[in-house]
Length: 464
Ligand SMILES: Cc1cc2nc3c(=O)[nH]c(=O)nc-3n(C[C@H](O)[C@H](O)[C@H](O)COP(=O)(O)OP(=O)(O)OC[C@H]3O[C@@H](n4cnc5c(N)ncnc54)[C@H](O)[C@@H]3O)c2cc1C
Ligand SMILES: NC(=O)c1ccc[n+]([C@@H]2O[C@H](COP(=O)([O-])OP(=O)(O)OC[C@H]3O[C@@H](n4cnc5c(N)ncnc54)[C@H](O)[C@@H]3O)[C@@H](O)[C@H]2O)c1
Image (cartoon, rainbow, N blue to C red; front, side, top):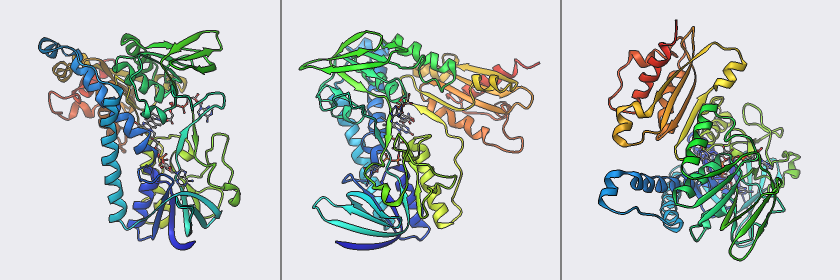
């Protein structure tokens, strides 16, 4: 057993842990990072964001090919197997992992691979693979252990046809039909992926609409298009039991319905990774979902111990995790890089894509804020007509007196990129946040950015 001393020890090498370590090192701290996996990158790179986005991209490309009349004149439709798209995703994960490993080496951050647990609030034990134990002494510790799929005890996840969002990546065959239980972001994204592979998809939603936190029109648009592509969405249905057989699975719902499928995916709920940390040694409680409470500066109730990323709950996004990680080592090193994160865009990689920032119509109406709406349908833009990606809308919500942007909601190809133009204007201070920006500046043509001009004109024309 050996002992090492650090200014900062980070547990977890996902986006939040990585950026905490990089910023800490650049601020002159001696930093170590521990990960239970034998590679860096976290669940983001190995199980969550990166593989799912790479799968989705491959599926989207084949869908574009199959739907393009020009290619139809040249050849038959083509289909990809899950194994084929998984291979492309694995390649991206490998690239990401190698790139991230170089970051640690270049920034002289020590890496330890093994399960970490607390001995006290400045001492971490690491259980290494060879049954050896390392002890790290740290002035400050950041918990960045992320989250994993919630697994209800009544579901047998050892059955070869029953999956969660981690194990679905091991699927060896392409199911002819799949049932996805849970219609949150993960459920909707995987519904798009399997639908694009040609599988029959049943998407079971315990709630009464898809992604209820979205603007109603966008959530309705998603439901309409998923259905249009053949996904069967069942709202207000709750799980009773699931039974796995040799070559099929039967899901029973509390409504009495039974659904037979080749593969079943549980996509309902995530749990913070805190149970292996021996938090009782430092008297730090996690909530029922394994998450930790922190203050504005990511400080837990225990001195020297901070937490960032999925383990602290909202917004549970890789995008925010990078900023939280940088912020927490800004607090620890006091190097001026702390930033409170209060506005985060949502990018949902369904097919079509969705992205949103700011308030919804429902929220603005409830708050009695006098707003107006400006819309541009993708089908009316030259760029979308050229690319053939004509499904979609950009919707700008703005204050009818001050013309400031209050919410941006986008549905359609590249929505997650398009949103950033409006986000930049929304963030302007001193009168800079105005929908008029899109009329006072010339944008490239033909681009999807043109939709901002069209939507701004549409909205301003409603004022009197
Ligand atoms: C299917 C899916 C798709 C997603 N898509 C997106 C998306 O498109 N955009 C987006 O912004 N977000 C997306 N997310 C969310 C995003 O992946 C997470 O928000 C992000 O990974 C959280 O990062 P993190 O730093 O908290 O830790 P994680 O990425 O969860 O990594 C935590 C690391 O800590 C390690 N660890 C845990 N416990 C210990 C321990 N005791 N000792 C040592 N190491 C430990 C784990 O091994 C892991 O490597 C998606 C998530 C999923 C599941
Ligand atoms: N494109 C993206 O940004 C993207 C893509 C996929 C996932 N994610 C992130 O992954 C997370 C999971 O996404 P989701 O939309 O599928 O929602 P979810 O699985 O977290 O939630 C679905 C339902 O399960 C419940 N639930 C959550 N955790 C639970 C637990 N431990 N025990 C019991 N019930 C629980 C929730 O209240 C909700 O009703 C989200 O935080 C999301 O931001 C993001």
